[in-house]
Length: 320
Image (cartoon, rainbow, N blue to C red; front, side):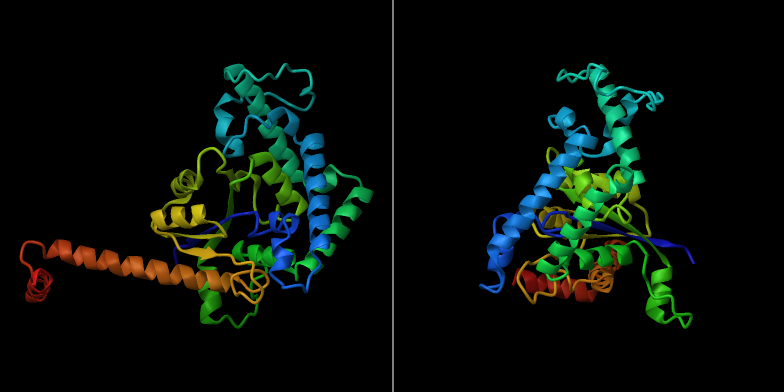
């Protein structure tokens, strides 16, 4: 059988992770007094501190903050492929003048960021800091009712990991085996902090660095168009998951299924709760509908010279 592909396009903040809603208290307030708002705010501030520290110390954020790009390879045509093993990024004269020379230096930084991302946090941080981050992750996961670990599990499923390996394969598992699964992030935040968040929140094993997009300057519809061009084909299906209006409208424009994440307790569209099977149901509904529309349009094209009695009847009824 020809292998098909599901491309899952995720928003990050308030979808795969919670940060803003911790900092402003809206997550805790949704529980009507059952959660301590102050604890959530403190947890959010600790995450903010770690994100900024890692960004500045290891990912050139102080240098590149004002040069946000939509994805890491965006300036790759300015990269001459030079060996960066002994390159001194602090002394190369990178400046605010965004000419071709500085675009090349920014492309070098993006290549170095990609390499650090692929190697993981353990190659950057010592054991004490890693232990601190692990404790903070567990604390946050408990406070958020397992939101973080459940989101990771869903990502793993959508990446084709942790799926049922029972040798007695049922129809659902057989259908899964036909598909290649790809996770992509499109976030409204800047690119470098978003990549760092992927590392800190343990998402990097399911989302490669070249599949993280920042829509900050270009908008989500443009990012979705790039993703469609990148993965498009007759056997590719897309699904968007997020909490905001922009990704909802962009998904509607692309005629892709959209699943809206809801912070309210007991909602099925949150974590824990949402699974890859739920997303597949949305995909099936939308794409089966599109297939039916295509079939009807094709039949209409074939019969457009001689309308059927059924078509004439309905056109008459419409005029009346």
